[in-house]
Image 1 (cartoon, rainbow, N blue to C red):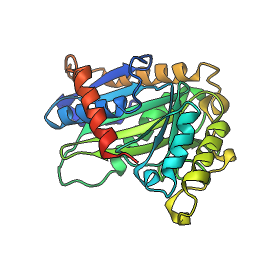
Image 2 (cartoon, rainbow, N blue to C red; image 1 turned 90 degrees about the vertical axis):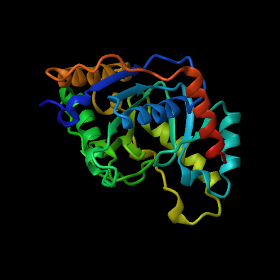
Image 3 (cartoon, rainbow, N blue to C red; image 1 turned 135 degrees about the horizontal axis):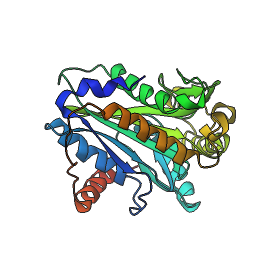
Length: 277
């Protein structure tokens, strides 16, 4: 089955921005800042974009995480241990990023500026990921997984173990749907890292203000779907195939006009200042 989301874009088309192996920028908010600028362009009539990227070692917090009583102390300990840290401007909670985590951003135009319904956009991301994993023969389920980090209604799981979380960022005329996919390595180790963050950051907080993370909630595609030790690359290749197949018969949208690196760095600095702990 073809990915149906691309058919809804009309003459907008979809451009794949593949930064899987671009590690030239150390700032963990660089990719989020790039999404923000690309979303503005899409909202002004530019093409839809699928942005695929990785970051070697970063701990990304959600806005609610940044307001926890001892978030600053937890951040300091992470940075002492060699983790870059930042607060993102999209929804969701804390997520560790590394070379074994593939990040997908779907940047899509809004059909109506007054449309505040987001489930259709989440379904489009779910369908893209499900199709990319179709050849594995595993069933991809959606629905919150108890004990998983960054929990939500659109947790994606295989056999009851979460491997993907989805968040969104909405602008006036376009939307960004962001997914992290735990592809390689140990899901349990990442869950334990997130649990250690909340053990410190949430001291004294109301229990409703943070997720209770357990190690047996999360696993990687390497562990769940038999994609092998290079599961990140295998999953990325499958995403490329889904998008290429969906683009067949669609109008050509030409090359994507990217903002300059300096413009992206300036936006990243704005995000750091706006969402600082």
